[in-house]
Image 1 (cartoon, rainbow, N blue to C red):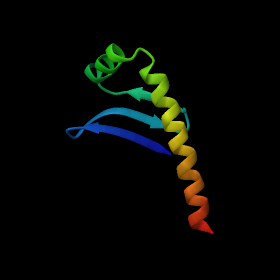
Image 2 (cartoon, rainbow, N blue to C red):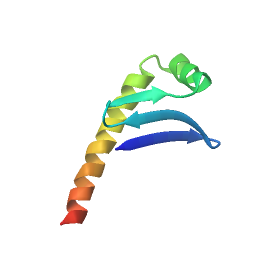
Image 3 (cartoon, helix red, strand yellow):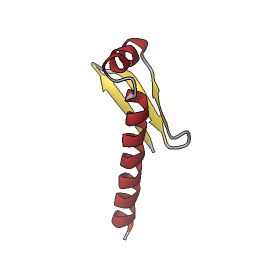
Image 4 (tube, rainbow, N blue to C red):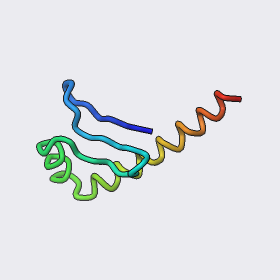
Length: 64
């Protein structure tokens, strides 16, 4: 499972189920988010993990 966050066609964040971590891809976006919420990256990682599980469950249902 891979999640990518884009702003104006520029990738700003990446989540990969192999690493289970959200990774900032643009320094300006990372800094802006951390300025507003120091725990932003950890919170986004948990949100992406939830989306991964929901997607996995949905795929299981579709396979049936």
